[in-house]
Image (cartoon, rainbow, N blue to C red; front, side, top):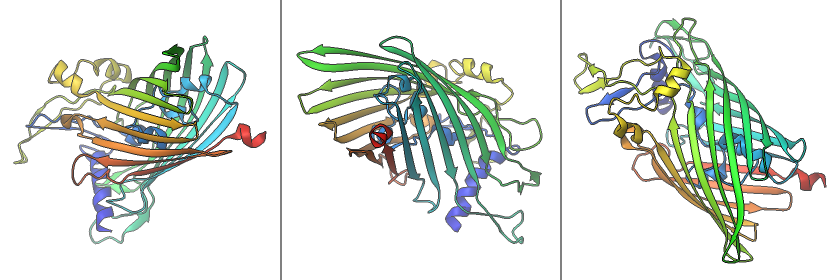
Length: 391
C-alpha cells in the first residue's frame, strides 16, 4: 500500500502542478529539461516483437501490430485478416497490479486497401484516494484507454500510405477532489499520418528487402482534467525508421532496424530559480498556451539550449531479428534517450514462435542503470492467423 500511495502521488503531482492537468517540466542546474505530456501511455510499446527489438518498428516488415508503429504498413501485409492480443505487467517493481493490454486486428478490403483497429487499455490498479489524512480512503481504479481505426492503401508496388483516427479517455482521478479542485476524466481526439516504402532486390544471389517508414502520431486536441480552460498537450510524436532484411541462406534470415523518435510538443523554457526551494532547481516556464499546430512546428527550434538541445530530444532504437525457417525468431535491441531528456537506456531481448494457427512472442527489458523502475518488464503477445484458421 505504501508503494502504491507513493506511485499515485507521483502521478497526481504531474497533474496538479499549478492546477490539475497542468504538466510542467523542471530544468535542473545540470542541464536536464524533461518534456512532459498528458496520456503518455500512448507512447509505451504495446507488443512483444518491437519490444524485443529496442522499440524499433516503424519500418520492420508488416504485421498485425502495425497500428501502433506505422498504419501504412497494413497495405503491404501478407494475408486477408488477423488479430493479436498483448499484455504487459507495468512497473512491477513498484506495484503489483498495473498493466497495459492491447488488442488489434486488420481486414483486407481488396489487394490495395486494408482497414485496421485497436484498443489499448492502461490500468493503474486499485488506488486508495483521500482528501485529508483523517478521511476514510476510497478505493478506485484509475485507467486510461484509446480506441483506433485506420485505413491503409497501396499507392504503388513499393509504396503505401495510411491514416488513423484515435479517441482517448484518461480517468486518473475517478472524479475525486484533488487539492480542493473537482476533477473529471480527460477526453481527446487525435490522428496519425504515415507512409511506408519497401524494395525487394537480390545481392550476391540472396534476396533482400530494404524498407523505410514515417509516422506522425497523436496529432490532435489538448486534454483537460478540470472544467476550466487549462489544457495540456498529448504526446504528438515523429517516428522515422529504416530496416534491411537479408536472406543468409535457404533457412536463415536477419533483419536490422533503426528508428528515430522525437516528441512534437514545446520544450519548456529554462525559467528561473525557484526561490521557495533550496535544491537549485530551475522551473521551466509554461508552454500550454501554444496551439497544437504552433507546438508542433516550434518543437524543432524552441529548446533553450539551441540545436544542441534539440538533438538531445531525439531518442533512437536499434533492433535485430533472426528467423530460422520463418518458424523461430531470436530478437535483440537497444533504446537510447539522452540523460537530460529522460535518461531511458536499456537493452531488450525476446523470442518468437510461429505455430500452425498462432504466433507467440515474448520480450524482456534490461536497463543499463540500477534501480530503474522499468527493469524486468515483460511483454507477451499472441497472434491468431485467421487466414489459416478459417481455411
